[in-house]
Amino acid sequence: MAVAIAGAAFAAGYVLRGGGNPPADRGIPPLTRFALEPPPGHAFSDYLSYCGPALSPDGRSIVFSAGDAAESGLWLQRLDATRATELAGTADGRYPFWSPDGTQIGYFADGKIRRLVVATGENHVVCDAGFTLGASWTDDETILFSGGPGQGIQSVPAVGGTPTAVTRLAEGEFMHVWPATLTGERRFLYESIRFVPDDPLGRRSNTLRAATLDGEALPVSELTGSGQAQFVAADLLVFMHERALVARRFDPESLRFGGERAVLAEPVVRLASRGDAPFSAAPGVMLYESGIEQNALTWYDRPGRRLEAVAQPGALWALALSHDDSTVLYARLDSDSGAIRIYRADTMGGGPEPITQGPAWNRAPVFAPDDRSMAFVSVRYGPPALFVRDLTPGSEPRPLADFFGLKYPNDWTPDGSRILLMRRVPPAPWASGLSIPGAPPSGDSSWPTWARPHARA
Image (cartoon, rainbow, N blue to C red; front, side):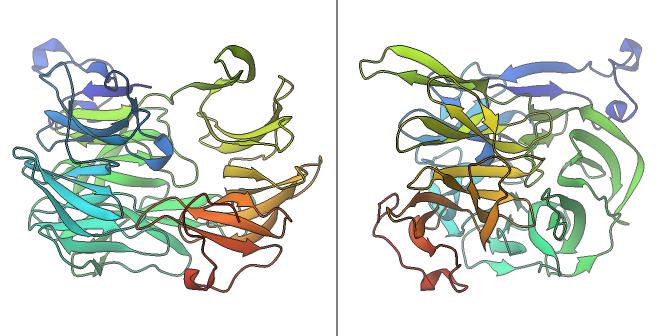
C-alpha cells in the first residue's frame, strides 16, 4: 500500500480554480505526485486504526506509523531524504500530530498522549487517553483531542496535566472528532458524528462545527457530509466532503465559507463507519491514501507449502475459523463504497458468499461453539453494537448490546451461553463476559473479567 503525495500551490489559489496544470507564465509550479512507501520489511499500520501520516507545519517532513511482524512505531520521512528514520521510544505510536513550530510530535500509545522532541528524542507523557480520533496542538501550547465515543473534544496543557472537556455532545450525537485549531486563535473546528436513528443501513451524519477553547459553541457555516478539516493557510481549509478531498476558502473571523469547493482528489478511501480518511495537508503539500493494501487468504501446510487460495486478494481482516476447520469467516473492505462486509468461504475453495449486506461497517466475526451462528460488531442501527446471526440463509441479525467504545467479540464459552469480549484499545486491554441473550447493566465494572486478554473461559 502506498500513500500518494501531491504538491500544489494551495496558497496561490490555483488549486481553487480547477484541474489540470496551470499555465507556465503565471509562475505557479505544476502539480507533482509521488508515492510514500513503507520502510523495507515494514507495512503501514492498520488502516482501520487510522494511523495515517502527518505532514509537518512547513510541509517538509512526514511522520507515520509502520510496523513489522514484531511491533509498530513512528517513523520520520524528510522530503529531502531517500529513507525514513525510525523514532526510538515510540512503540505502538499512532495518530501522530505536530506542534505548531514543528519541533515536537504528539502521538497516542499505551493509553496515553505522549510528546517527542524531534531534535533530542526526549519523550514525555502528557496525559491518559483512550480511544481517540484526531488531535491538534494550539499556538498557546494546548492539545485538543477527541475523547472517543460518547465524549466531546478534550483539552490538556502540552506540558502535561489532567484533560478537561471542551465540547459536550448534544442529543443524538455519537462523538466529536478531528479538532482543527484556527491559527493564532482560541477557536477551533471539529467534526460532529451522529447516526440516523433506527436506520437499518447504519448511516451517519458528519458535520463541521466550531467552538472556543473555553467551550463556547460558535455559529459556523455547517457543512453536512463534511469533516476532518485541516488548515493549510489562515483562510484556506482542506477537508473531506462525501468521498472527495476538497479545498475551500474559509473566513476565520466570520467562520463562513466563500467560493466553491475545489476537488483535490477523488475518490479517496474512506471508512464507512466513521467517515474518516488517512490524509494530511500543509502549505503546498498534501498526502492521502490512494488504495488499500491487498492481501490474500490462503491455506498452507505445516511445512510451509502453499496449498489453495480461500478468497480473492483484497482488503481482508478479522479471520474466524470454524471448529471443524471447514469454513472461514472474514471481513472485507469495499473500497468503492467504504463498507465492510463479512463473508463466508469453504476452506477448500468454495464460495465466498456475503453474510452481511448494505453499506454498514461489520467486523470481528466469531463462530458459536456449534458453528451454526456467529457474533459480530456492526454499525447498522446507530452506534456500534454486538449482534448474533444464524448462518442459515435469510436469517436476520439480533442485537445484544450497544458499545460506547471499541469492544469486540473474541470467543464464546463452550456451552454457548456467554461471549467473551475484548477491548482492543488503551488504557488497558480487558476481557469480559456478556450473557446470551441478555446484556449486562451499564458500566464495565459490573462485568466479570478474566485475568488477561484472549484467555478462554
